[in-house]
Amino acid sequence: MGGLILLATLIVVAPLILIFFYLLKEGIGAMNLNFFTRVPAPEGETGGGLLNAIAGSVEMLLMASVIGVLVGVAGGIFLSEYPRHPLMPTIRMLSDVLAGIPAIVMGLVAYGLIVLKFGFSGFAGALALGFLMIPIVVRTSEEVLKLVPLSVREAGLALGLPKWLVTLRIVLPAAAGGIITGVMLALARVAGEAAPLLFTAFGNPGVNLDPRGPMSALPLEIYRGATSAYDENQRLAKAGALLLITLIFVTSLLARRFSRRR
Image 1 (spheres, rainbow, N blue to C red):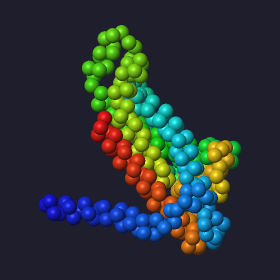
Image 2 (image 1 turned 180 degrees about the horizontal axis):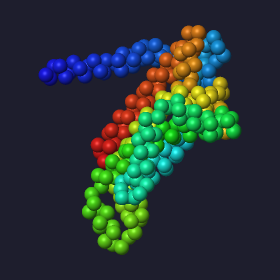
Image 3 (image 1 turned 180 degrees about the vertical axis):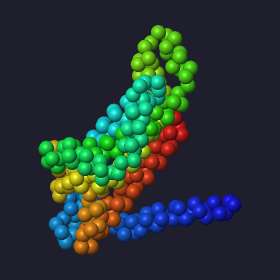
Image 4 (image 1 turned 90 degrees about the horizontal axis):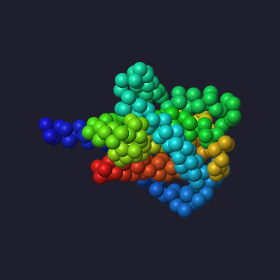
C-alpha cells in the first residue's frame, strides 16, 4: 500500500515537475538583465524585457491586498466572533458563493463597475484580483480566529474591556500569524490570473505606475507572448511564466514556514 500511495503521489506531482523543468529549459536563457530592466521590444525584434509587466503586477497585487485584507479579515472576524448574528448565514453564503465564481466573471464585474465608466485601468484590475482574494482571506481568518482559546477572550472581558476592543487588541494579535499566512496564500492564488485582467487592466507596452490608466501584468504578457507567431515573444513568455511560478512557489513556501513558526 505504501508503494501504491507513493506511485499515486508521483503521478499527481509529475505534471507540475514537467511544466517547471520545461519552463526552466526554455525560459532561463531569456532571464538576463534586459528581462528585468526593459519593456517588450516591437513584434519580431529581439532584446526586450518584461519590466512593465513586473512593475504592473507588483502594483496591482499591492492594491488588491488592501481590498482583500480589509474586507476579508473583517468578514472573518464577523463569522468567528458573532456566530449568532442574524446576518451570519447570509454572509457565510455570500462568502461560499464568491469562492466558487470563476475569475473571468470577476473581471466582467469589475469591467461593468469601473471600465465602462472610467476606461481600462490598473485599479480595475486590482479590484478584480481583490474580489478573488476576499473569500480566501475570509475563510482563513475565520478558521484561525476560532483557534484562539475562549479563555483568552474571557480574560479580556473580565478586565472590563468591550468585546470589540478584546477582538482588536487581544484576539487579532494572537491570530496574526495565521492571517498573514492566509493573505500570502491568497496573493499566490491570484498572482497568475490573466482572464480578469484582460477585461480590466488591458495591458500597456510601457511602464505605467498610474493606476488610473492601463497597466500590464505578467499573466497578460505571458498570454500575449504565448499566442504570438514570433519566437522571441514566445521565449519571453516562457521566461515570464518561469518567474511567475517561482514567485508563487516562494510565496507559498514562506507562508507555510511562517505558519509553522507561529
